[in-house]
Image: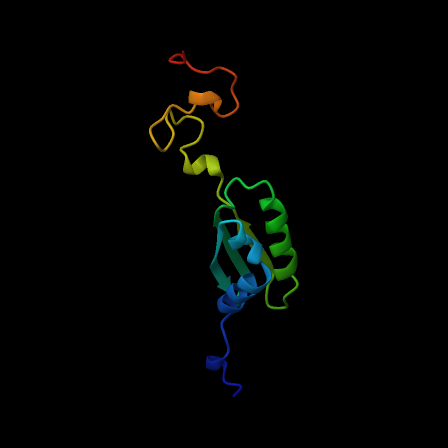
Amino acid sequence: MTDSEDEPSLKERVEQWMAREMPIIQMHGGTSAVRAADPETGEVIVELGGGCKGCSVSDVTTGNIEAELITWPEIDEVTVRVPDARDSLGGPDQPESIMGIDRTEGGRGDWGSSNPGKDHL
């Protein structure tokens, strides 16, 4: 049948492509979600998470996704978002780690500063 109801939506097709062509995301503990795929405007928004946050090659991954999807005739704009790992930890102003331990303990540093903090032994 050629009925449009039987054809997968743009969002479903992008999700299927991501699962098929970008398995490295899941292999490295990452996640992906198609947040928007509007065939009327041609806009697609993909969000990466999990292990992608703070990954040193996430720029390569986002570039590969953008480069492929922009070639699809029905897509005019591609946005791939990767949340900054620092945002999920509260950023540099957060005094403690998410586990309640001083981030400077054990030489982990405090977001790049060489100052270990006033409570450091």
